[in-house]
Length: 183
Ligand code: AMP
Image (cartoon, rainbow, N blue to C red; front, side, top):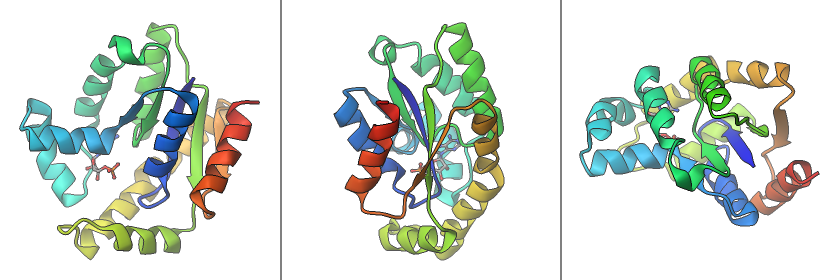
């Protein structure tokens, strides 16, 4: 199973992605976590990503696409994955499909956790890391609306979009997702 989780900051992507990986026994690729680890261990990707992650900007598509291209070739994700935080732009979504075509694979579902904007903001404020200023949180939300929301059309057009009401307790959201992906 190959699943993409889409949602704004605070939509519950991380929680749902982890639950899905446990329930379906498939590995998780959480791009935000991967980038933070890369920054902490000062790898080439980490050095490149640091100024963007610190300010809430998106790391340039070229770097992200290059990273995913290499990562999805590794054996541990050959039989499936949950991608969290990727794709985040229409360009990343298209390039992901090109890559999967090359590998004779395809996405099963792009799961959109739909949560009202006001709730995204209040949840993000609650869980903000110490260095997240209100400006950075707002910037993340703006980028989500400008860059990531258009991806919904991309997947809808390809009959891959699964819209899930994310404004409910996490277990309920998870059961709803499982009902669809297992049917
Ligand atoms: P997250 O934990 O998913 O909110 O990601 C934290 C930060 O990592 C984001 O604010 C971006 O700076 C960067 N990031 C994560 N995923 C991507 C992506 N697919 N494209 C570009 N930047 C990303």
